[in-house]
Length: 105
Image (tube, rainbow, N blue to C red; front, side, top):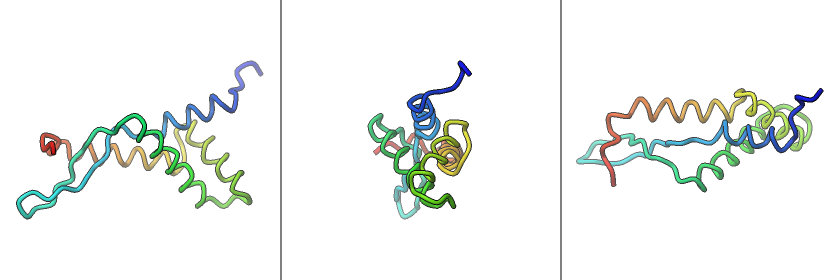
């Protein structure tokens, strides 16, 4: 029907849904390890999203890599799939360690 999304729209949605805005970096401070949430630069957000989509597509059971990637991208565009979950988990971890975000290096 008319509301069919184009492949480009699905791809854009998938990327948007998988792009992390914050990541957690390990820092040693006075002998202790802290997980510090850090904002991610725009260009890196995109490369991380693509890396995750490819990585989790590879783990799928579909026959060809093209099918695996298509399946993962479609899932991500619907806020489903392993790459989307990875982003969600990354954000949860940053949220959990928000107390340490004042440690800027």
